[in-house]
Amino acid sequence: MKIKKKIWGCLLSLLCIFMLVLPVMASESQETDSEIPAVTSEDLAVPTEIPAIPEERQKPLLVDDAGLLTEEESSALLNKLEDISQKYENEVGIVTVNSLEGKTAEAYADDYYDYNGYGYGENDDGLLLLISMGEREWAISTYGYSHTVAFTDAGLEFISGEFQSKLSSGNYADAFNCFADQCDDFLRQAATGEPYDVGNMPKAKVSPFWLYTDLVVAFLISFGIVKAKSGNLKSVKKQESAKAYERSGSLSLQRSTDSFVNRIVTQRTIKNEKDSSASSSGSGGSSSHTSSSGRSHGGTSGKF
Image 1 (cartoon, rainbow, N blue to C red):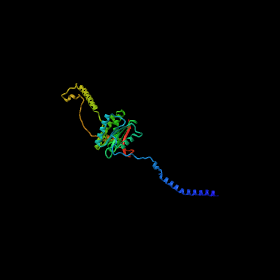
Image 2 (cartoon, helix red, strand yellow):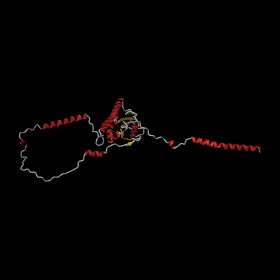
Image 3 (cartoon, rainbow, N blue to C red):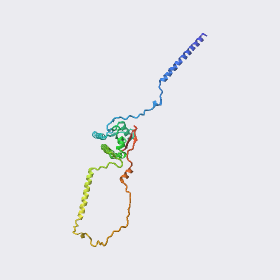
Image 4 (cartoon, rainbow, N blue to C red):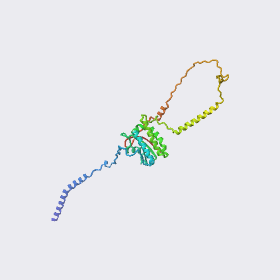
């Protein structure tokens, strides 16, 4: 009996100790759980912040990553681009790359312009010609003054038509210099207040060689015609009287009178060819698209 009492006493003691310790363990467990922060869906979300646009340009106006130009060609072209950009306060850049890295040529050109800080002044005025050798594509991105005033859609189409054949034939230095010269011309025209656009495009330039050639050919043809005609006149002799030029019996005038019978007036509208061609070609101006930075750009693109 004494042994049983001792056993029961030990069990009761253990039970009492357990009852006292249990609340302490529960409180410690709650404190430990509270120290572990809860994971929310926001913590698992991938950051989608748009890169900041630099206030200053991060790269030169000429970037030849594809290695298309010699050192001499690069130096001369860079000087030309810098002179044009300073003269008109509108940056003109050229960039060559090996790949578009999965982007379109238009998107790559826009992003390169924005995220490398291109553009003159507070409004970041300028344009950029991008060449990708991997895809053999090109794109022009315009922004600010270049987009809204100097380079319209019709103007960009004209400029690309001037340099694209040179790109296709591999004359890259000639193509880039042609682009720079056209930009110089377009910015000069825009400064007059009448930028090139539909109905007001640059006149085709004629090479001095062909001009001189045409003059020489025209002179030779005219000389030959005059020489031939003068040979046929050798049999003609000067006459003293006008009667000598009258054929006998060819004229017998008895009486001459004029009588007004009727008058018919026909009217028709003559269209102005300049106005009709301008209206059929479109209203002019520049189209717009939004880049990944949220900016509004203009431009055009193509293959070579």
